[in-house]
Length: 440
Image (tube, rainbow, N blue to C red; front, side):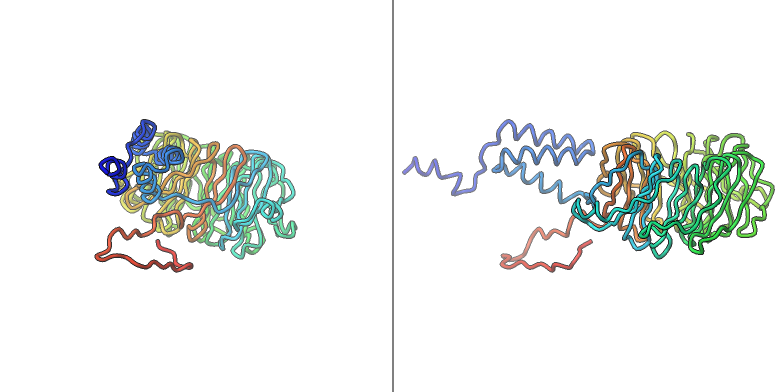
């Protein structure tokens, strides 16, 4: 009898079996990953160990908690593989299509539906190949047409379902160097090595303005939110601004000591944001040629500068992998920033400015919560440097593209932990679910 009690005691009183050395090593390694903010590696370690030791409750509890307590972004589509680096992506306003443009002049339109590989391949639309790398893409509001700007061909507008060319600008005399768009109005602009700037309304399928300036190559472009103005950063270190559609210049230009790499407009379209190799961002009144608030000294070269969708913040993306944020009314440096281990290739705001997304040369995309500049959820891993990101208007879909020719779409409104009921005051006897409910 004493022998039976000794043998059965662990089962009768729920004593856990002794942990194996392999299990102990696994959860110690996982804990180390958690402490160094590497939850993906921690989950992989725990899952591998739990497969070998399914009775280990410590491993099971750690694995459950790791999955429950983190946001994991889920792929909406299978990866789309193209022939060269995918330099630009775009999503239609209704979220039904995404477009990809490569350095090898390919333009592809794909559905955002979650399809099996064979159905996704059948739904893929490959437009006739352009000449020169694709610099920018934009869908019309109804999602039936796509504008593509390439280095050599300029701008073309396609009825992509029929693969029918609807409009094209005259072939530029020199290569295209810059692209900009005003998503609210469907206006696209591009600039060339020779200094020409062309502006096209892709909704009306017509050219709006053809501008010429004496400052040489256009290094960066911006179109104001409602397409009332366009600004160009020129090779002579001067930023020039024009009214649209009459093309009348505004002021005498905004001179800088070094190259300007980024331009943008304030939300009210009154002021121009400039930034670049001087390591300083400035907000100007272009008509008077004066700054409207103090300089924003960043301490490193600025590759991109973007005003948030609500107009309250300015983001300056630096070449050291960090991004600084500024009050758009006072130029005060906000007490948070974001940093990656490698330079950011792209940065976009959501329309309301509450979140943003970035593309890292380290091979991942990241979504940020802009209340405190913290990462929202885990980074989204990719097999090579991420070159571009795009969000649809409601920010539920994120499109990404990579240097090794991959493009895909991710959901940003799933993968979060559901509400967990940990305790009941009495014994729980039933459980039911609502199939259509989403807890967020």
